[in-house]
Length: 238
Image (cartoon, rainbow, N blue to C red; front, side):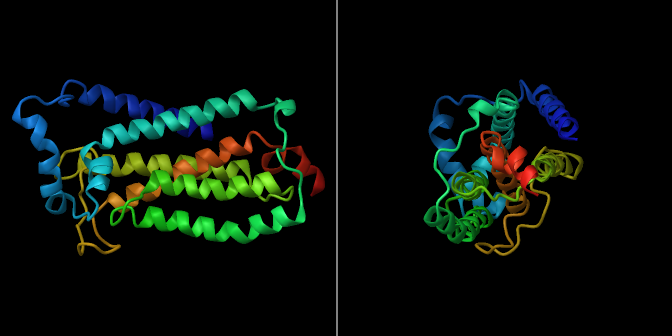
């Protein structure tokens, strides 16, 4: 299933590159070079409804680049998992399990995940978004994996979340392409009330998809280095 969705993601990304190549201005000269940033800052609220101008640039103005970054991260995590798969001698625990580390990781886990979700949800309002939020959530799982043998995390669940998040990103882009604006990743939803959670159209949904995808990819990459979350030790103990 993961291979199927991965193939769809790669083919879709290649299709978008082919359809837009030659139509994107990769450089600006003269007065345009100095006015691009000013124009974005002045027009971002009216164009996207987002209070965070950086979010508008990352998700909409240069959405193709963000899709490429997500794809590169996916390929890096996939390559890492393939290289470490089956090499049990590489999968070693850095710390021995101890009561203090295990208890502390379990106490910190929900707060780290909550903080990561906050960064993702408020990405269109304050500095943050899907990439840093996903990394924070993956860090919570990383701490659990590093400090405890009892990890209830399934590889299939991580793969499904990763695949669905990637498909959601592409689906939102296609919805804009097929809509009235005829543009991939066009903001086809209402902008809502400015500076509130329910604002900025599709931006919060894109950031949610990016956060889930980044978090699941990094969690899977970390899990591939250890036995307890995905390997034989947990299965033998059940």
